[in-house]
Length: 176
Image 1 (cartoon, rainbow, N blue to C red):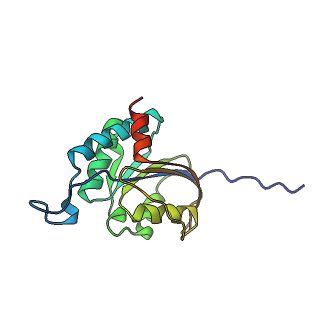
Image 2: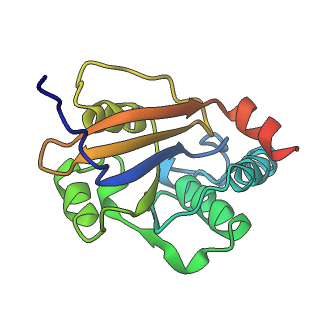
Image 3: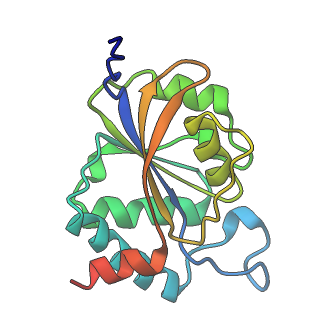
């Protein structure tokens, strides 16, 4: 028999869409200025507790520089007590740069677990990219979380979807 040895995962990548944000209007003049709403902050704290209850631990948290994504990442880092690993990166800005993101990820090791915080449709597109299926689409509601084990880190990475959690499921986990 010819057995194929499974590759050891290169690293784990989790992708999180930012929480509920305010609309443009009044004092908020641009998309980049949209902060999380009070409800978005409350929900994200509960979702971050859900991540804590799942025993999620990260080597790094990389976030878009856009306000609502930064606030989301800061809440997660605060709840998980890992503010020192939070890094803002233009690679996850609107639009994101896959080339810049892959360059950022090269600094990490095989056993690292990286959280990426960003926007739609970028999170769905990055998920498809990491899974090696460019046409695959996910629906990332605000606060959705996905975990992928990468088996290959090259300009065209390959990974395996481990799970995808809706914001409601994550909040339920946070309420335990």
